Image (tube, rainbow, N blue to C red):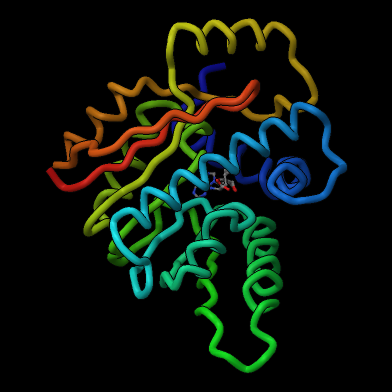
Length: 239
Ligand code: SAM
């Protein structure tokens, strides 16, 4: 059946509070109880995080910069950002993810500050869908979230995220190219246990159009690929 708008969101939320939480917590973690595919995805995703950190720090030091991490997952980006001195507001639709991110942030950030020297400010974590985030931030980042939504919904999300950002917006998504589209169609012929949610690919031109519509332009692009992970990374600024 055709899923529209809100339907996806409820399914996604349920997934990331339950089986999706278990699966992605492992992938985004450090333990070695992952299979080959999961390990490959972990590697690809960590490259995305590294690329984003580089994009952000290339522009100058992050100390005191306000960053909104929309759909923060287990905190893979929020934590290194906070370590660099950014003032991070991180949120996710999944309460399970937010609890895990909070726990990891405390462990990883405070671990190195036992001698009384001032520790970085911990990210402020919140359970919220990104559509409900408000406020203004120097930078808004949203990594690997759009994949859960069709293009019309993604357009609305991009517009909302842009409205929160003052200087830059960084997005990653699974690019819709002839090759990946084909790969995905073939994959769908063999449904496995991990296929609990639909994955949507997005054409870069469509994402660019959504940004242009709200007065933003793409300044930098990156592409991260491993065997089983692929992400297009874009940094947008007010046009
Ligand atoms: N951004 C994180 C990262 O790259 O490490 C997590 C990526 S994970 C594939 C997708 C995350 O998006 C999940 O934690 C999920 O709960 C969250 N999510 C999905 N839909 C959302 C929405 N509408 N608002 C906020 N978070 C959402």
